[in-house]
Length: 252
Length: 252
DNA sequence: TCCCTCCGTTCATAATGATGAACGCCGTTC
DNA sequence: GAACGGCGTTCATCATTATGAACGGAGGGA
Image 1 (tube, each protein chain N blue to C red):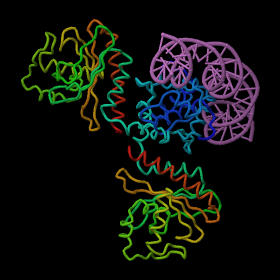
Image 2: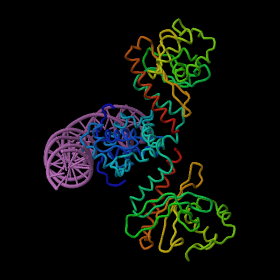
Image 3: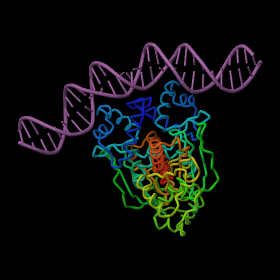
Image 4: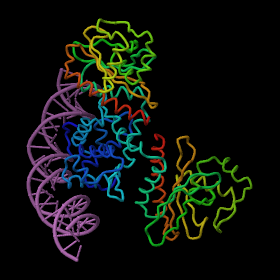
């Protein structure tokens, strides 16, 4: 994505990534076009990937990934469990935002905080590992709720009103559902001082193999640091992490 | 392993493969030493792999694979089933030997042939897809038997004698067990005109996730072409395929 | 059938990566 | 605490890779 030291390697790996998104394979010119490479350069790289057997050529002259990439990757997964997967992607996202991050699991009507990485900035969020928070007042929680149907959400809060934690806490289920709809659209949840003063959070939920929400990630920062732009960046960061983690979990 | 067109890409991918065999990670100098690279070259490549996030640096300055390789590889597997996995590795092995290959499943006391690739040489084996053969008279079958205990094998043939298909067919269970022991040692089975005249085969069994023999691959050739050396080559080829397929199946 | 286009391949040259030597850092030894 | 050895990093120079242009073949339309 960014500027890498070594062009050749960068390109080779990008080709593998590209092919992974095209199970039916791509022709040489398609690869060249997609990565804006001269066809002769693409040709050279594909020859190498062929002889190394990362790629094969179908009878229709389409390049397809072989299982070799999977062989290599699978070795990592053998020695990795779910929490390590979450932590690894949390670390990657952290490297891109340097704000306190949390990881939580869905536990009834609450989110249970199970892991954190603390920002190195002098003004930062305190940690929450081990505690529980109501779903409706946290970014992670709202991300969880957004993965449920409206009926499921209403069933969680039959009273219809939501006990306030701050004066910004969402007051009732109707307001909550309105927000969830926006969250579903956008792909990430946010929470602005609804849980504690001067703290803003962004969160996403991770679906397990069964398609049910299982884990969540969040980025928390002092509200003054969470500009509109930063919010968008963090949201995009988390959405990317979500997609990747889900892909890994599906095969785990 | 061999001569690839592009040195840079070759090296980068080899590093990924190397790291996949070292879950705890390797230090820069270890990588350089292992691949006989100057440390400055290794350094350059590792920097690239770092920025591309295929690799991360632990606090102890060890390079470890991230899950990115797995993400890429997992995409292939999503659209692949077991028979396609087998066929893919069969094709790779075929490219290295150009002799008729078969793939079979264990079915009671027989091996059921489910797929083939025919040699392009003018003198070649006829195809066997869909037929069944006794375990004791085929390379695939003996490979299956070699994955069982002696007791299990004896239980399959309580009579102790084995109906001959040619005059070379192994005559009884005792002789069979002797051969199975050698097969276990060597890692691959062979069969020399025990099933049909002038045909020699090499075979390996593939263990499923449950650790039980499930599939087998074989290479068949006219006996005159199966020199001692070629036999060894084909055996090694199949053993490699076996290892890889099992690794993939384990994560499938 | 002929022409045209599109695709993959090849090749000489320009751009980029590889390398060993030198540097700085740290921990260890004497 | 001085000297040494091992490690990662940097840099100038040389070897390899990237590239555009040219080639040849396959398919399609007129």
